[in-house]
Length: 230
Image (tube, rainbow, N blue to C red; front, side, top):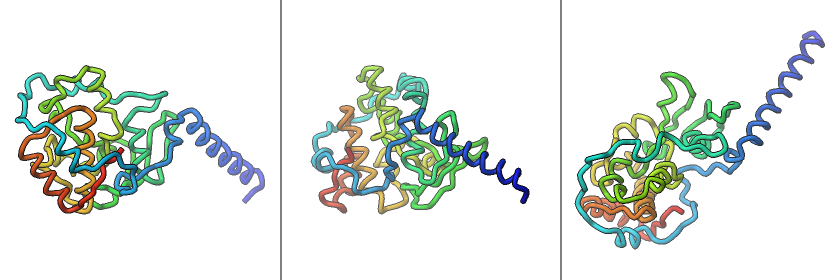
């Protein structure tokens, strides 16, 4: 290999490293440590079954008036980084990020199916990994979110507590289901999943239906002492 070519390759490598450092400096949100969505060591804030028993139990309100826009115009941005990419960076490993604060590749250890999903940003591949609203927004709308302020609904839709990166097909299968109609096929994650739903509903003053409460209680009975994620 000629010396001049070697120098050009070395300079190119230095430029690439400098670019990656610059991205992190420009986007401090992406400097936070990545906490896997399935990490059971997440800080606790109370007991899930106790919190479940504090939630109001009511029937579904009509879905009248529901649109995604009731929860804000897409993903919010923090210092140039949108919520989707912040969550991708939190939940995926070995991520690569471009100068637009977009995660362009990474690996997801999917909490819903237990399988590993390779993520590559691009047409036809980005949807392989989706960001799930753990409490589906239409479900939230029918169980108290209609009474929230617009700013509170926007906060709910962008709250990291409410969001998990998930296998796209599993997320589509879930649709707007609650715990009475859909649970992750990965049974090892079900306790954490319903505890997170309870935490979201507690935080945003949402209620559960009788069937939903029964389904969540049945799961939590298999993991006594399950804590709420913070």
